[in-house]
Length: 387
Ligand code: GLA
Image (cartoon, rainbow, N blue to C red):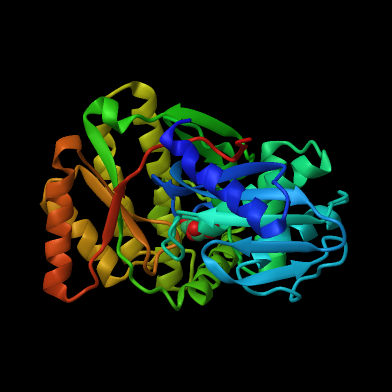
């Protein structure tokens, strides 16, 4: 037994105490950070996320009449039937569980009733895709218990449908694809139009670097409405420009294209999406070239500036974290995830993480912000059955 096995064994033991029988297995699915490619996934664009070592574990076994979902992190217990549950029946954390049963059932799969116990060390509300991790772990549980053979990408799409149509969160497909397709030591280069996945080697430690994640702990209340608004603006702009999606707007002569849009804010939103797609390809080119990883730094920092100035999804804590990390010597830094709070990532020398982290903390203290949390991202495997 390795120390990493302990959480799994604890969870299985707690399942047995709670439900009066051992689980049939324990499944895991990771959270993610996005290296670059923000607000591009719902524009048919490119993203470059990596699965994290922070993950959701689910112990589960088939049940007789109804399903029960419990979590070590949540007080409420959800009871529902996978055969009948509908959106709005369940609205708390367990909607991410019941929604997967609903998406499978309405997709034509027979879903058994199931008892589940969830454990997670993915911070909630930090933009690290704790909900996609939960959905993907549960999807693996339910398809395994049902004996359904569904490919990874179809499973990710199913989990997105659960989030979009059951939970009511209008996400793109990046988070679910990262959680399903993550691979140790790799980033997931995803074309969100074709859904083609390419695993690209990404090993900061081997280059003497670290990808540091700073959780700003900034509250992000407005996030949902703002996210939906950005999506709508992008959809409307694509229509005005006569293209299927902003992915199809060429980076060449961008300013001339933007002049065809009647409004300054929309022009800036489009500029972000088009330049961000180009930056993803720039980072991919560096990864392919075998050049030192620090060469991706400027693209990361440019992504942040674009998210701040053109897409306007940053908040003061995100900007201060990026600026202070850069001032302390980070090669590049940017917000990651949807924005309006959440996390920043910074590419730093492996030996200077504490120094850069302390500089960010000092800057936060000086501004009167809450003390941020931080960890080093380890590119990790995607959703899987552990036992
Ligand atoms: C959230 C969504 C993703 C993606 C990002 C922004 O994390 O869930 O689909 O749109 O925001 O890049």
